[in-house]
Image (cartoon, rainbow, N blue to C red; front, side, top):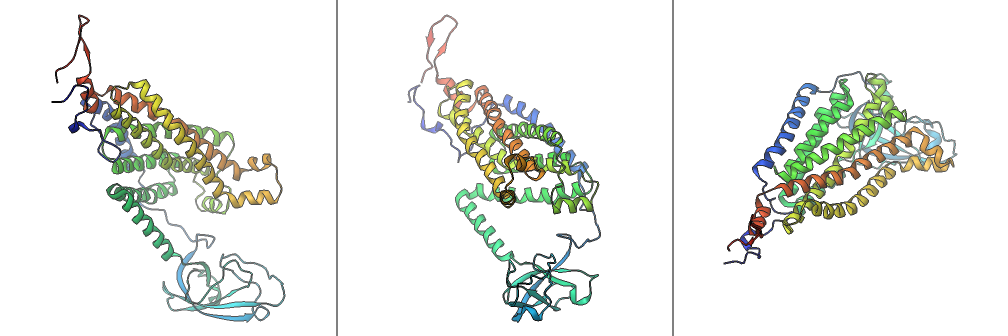
Length: 436
């Protein structure tokens, strides 16, 4: 027989690695009333906007829009650079003028095409000694094919084949996730595959077909959020609260992004890649594409924050079932402050690292901070970073208060057990304890 003040062993608290305590039937109905219409709207959006593949177009032969095949370097000879044509097409694919640097040894690489209708055909690639990337015998390469060029100039090396190291690194990542996360890790990898499928089969083709990029991003990101969160964390009230918190934060990011992208006159057409996209598909709203990128880019970090906050509140409630809504919120928000401080710093550094070559160019030009931040290239990253960070900061109190309200209103599980064994005040003012 246990004391009414002790916590019996059969009712031990569950932790993050175990299943979440169930909530009451009434709360499940409330949560379902919010999420089922939302999930239905996402499904309808997927059906209505489903593109059925990217639209075809004629190859321009520029940048990524080139026909490519696989190749292999079968022989390397050292030749005097004076004896070969100084003007060349280097591995980057851009023609450069003669360097005029005087005598030197160039590499004359014989490359064999290993895929496509010209499989077995060979061509010669000249690599200057100051080229950023050198070739070696037996190396796999990517070759660009220009059908309208003279036969001797139809093929050129445009990149190296790095499939094996990339595949090996992905395998190491998958093994690490499974070794540490076990079944949760497996489900996380499956959710990652589904996210890529939604991105490549729905979001990208739908934008190319001419659908509104913002609408496509909202529908696609919502589908990724629902699939990933429920697949990784289970179909529980705790996950549902994280979903609602993520949804509210995404709406805030969308509103702020739309406001400031328009206010700052950001076109989204700032480099060769976006220029090529606009040239091939002029009907695409490039500023809308920029906003879509902000929403999708913020989703992954938002998931992490909302799930962490919800789990923290749930665990606090199970550790002390008598703690009220205000106490749960205060304890949860203290955890959230530490989390958000590190996440925002991580986000800013991630964007700064991606734009490091651009920042170096501004440093070389000795541009002022005002000039740098006013340029559209940098302004895009600033707006992207700050809008995403505001959404992350807002997700902490929003998710924490939602989780605190849900677990405080619950009358089942650990909370119910604690309530059943707690002192009860009768209508006559006498205090009566329940019998053990």
